[in-house]
Image (cartoon, rainbow over the protein chains, first blue to last red):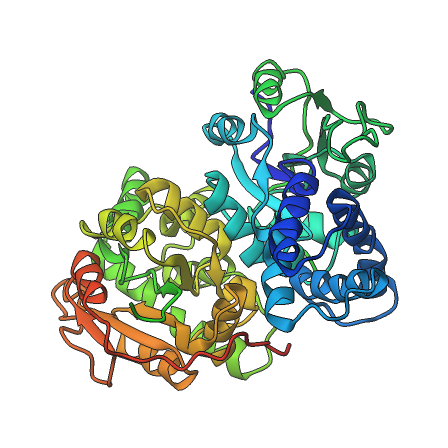
Length: 250
Length: 250
């Protein structure tokens, strides 16, 4: 028995394949308008604007806004870059919900069910609550709570996002494990005092290889959530410091 | 088809019978210490300090703190009032978790399952996230998200709590229905622009009668969640104003 009470999850890339579904949704909405484009490339261009937009909120004092709003502003830029200024408002609104219609990697639903028998589970994503709710309904994820950026009013990798997720479960950081396919996310979680699990998702970026192993120290490394569940079964030898409660200042 | 996208629920009294379980838990922890008391009366005394403690946060500028912390401070006062200053710290901590071990009224789990097929569902309680998570696990509630006081960083009946729950689901207040057994809760939700459903829970206060009908105008009134589900089936004639999104300022 280890002393971990909750697992919190990165979602885009770690649990769901954003690139395939966004390319599909963009094609579905724009092809009927007679538009042809490199649809996976459209998805990549849209995603590429995600990090810089959040950085404006993290470091330049912009007020917090939902990821849906960031996605929409970025969509307008991508369409303009492709000379597609004629795409109407209704189509843009529908298109922005592409991120609510992503499909999970094949191991995820079964893996979460298995992990749920032993741990409290929540997403700790930069995606907003309604986006997480729609992905959960679509893919059969059963969460204990939706935590992450919108609850913390801040974006990963800011420490407050990981700390407020642990605190919501009444757990110390060291009793909480962050699960992600990205070393940068896990490095930030570890720096905040959390346990970390790396999940390899080499197909996240299509032909551009994703991380096959973590480039930072992690507590556990697996290739699927089912493998993670098995590894946590036989993980008795990691004593965890456990102050009873943490209080997050805001 | 009505235009309601989500139902949000009061929990203490509306979904769970707090009085019976708190009395049971207090007896379980204090009887072995040789203490005898009026256990339901202990539960009533503890609950009676809930409203004034929240009022300090709502109106006197006290910083937000979780309901678990409020319950604990109030427990210390109730024990002192009964001359039980000798109760040790370990017992007090265990006792405070009584509120995490409440049982649902008999119709609730089935009613939520039925309602979940048509609406997004979340608690909108003054209880903290971990408390809601424990009640959900205990009673088999499947929520889409845990919303309410801890997410809004404010306590009902402040409007921001209802409005932030609607906004988390990307819904206008008029597309969101508050479900509660207390007229005061529903009056505040209606004033914030939400639809309202009253559920009669006359046994909430034991021999002291609870509300059998709402004392304020509500959209729907029922005696169980299953009845509420049937009534919302045949509720096509309430046009709902539906601005597409609301943005809650913080």
